Amino acid sequence: MSETLTLDSAPSTSAPAPRTAAHRRAVRQRRLNWIAVHSLGIAAALFFLLPFVFLFLTSLMSDDQSLSANLWPQHWVWSNYVNVFKVPGFTDWWKNSIEYSVLGTVLTVLSSIPAAYALAKFRFPGRRAAMMAVISMMMLPPQVIIVPMYLLWTNQLHLTGTIWPLVIPMAFGDAFSIFLLRQFLLTIPKEYLDAAKVDGCGEFTTLRRVVLPMIKPAVSAVALFQFFYCWNDFFGPQIYLAQNPDAWTVSYGLQTFHSAHHTDWNLTMAATLLVMAPVIIVFFFAQKAFIEGVTLTGVKG
Image (cartoon, rainbow, N blue to C red; front, side, top):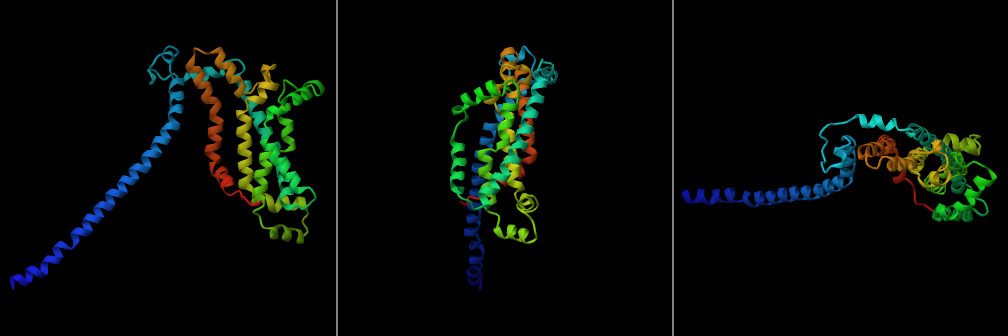
């Protein structure tokens, strides 16, 4: 009887052992995978974040400590950010950059949408040639045409020293914005446009009431791209605004600020963060629309 009980009970005590060992190995493997994946993510995050941390900590140091090897502020000098705005011209640079970025973004969006709509939905002779011209302009660096453009704005129009040589060309569309919007418009079914025309809508009404609400993600992406470009633009202000300090933007004025305060690293870092802040804030609040507009853009040709 005891042998029978022993034989019957043996499988019940030994059977769960292989399952427990396999479960432990699986749990250990999942933990190792989690550590490996997140370690790479943490390392990448630190790689991009540490320069901003260094800028922030240095901007809160005193004048003497900013020249030392200390990485942590002994005294948190928040007044550095106030002192930056006391530098002559810094507030005007901000105003000029906001004016340049807002006007440039609005004009680019308003001019690129009709061009992209025509290239995506209209059938006309030379349509492919026009699209190839847009793509060619994307490949053409601005330095190639800067000499004739500068002579035009200087000798004929006499507008150098103002932001208008930077803003006015954006009223004629931007090659990249037109291309991005066209790719998105190609994904919109033609039936929506036909239904609007059956209801009596013209092309402009169809674009305004039917198409625009459907391409908001793409429009948001284009607007953000253009805003970032205008705010960070250094080449254009260097060419057209250098002779008029009252018209400088923050991207160009920051170079002069660094030259004048090359030993005041705390003020230089504070000014750099203030220049970067609008771009970071705008992207933080609009990143959902930005990512959606880029990822949903079609690749249909």
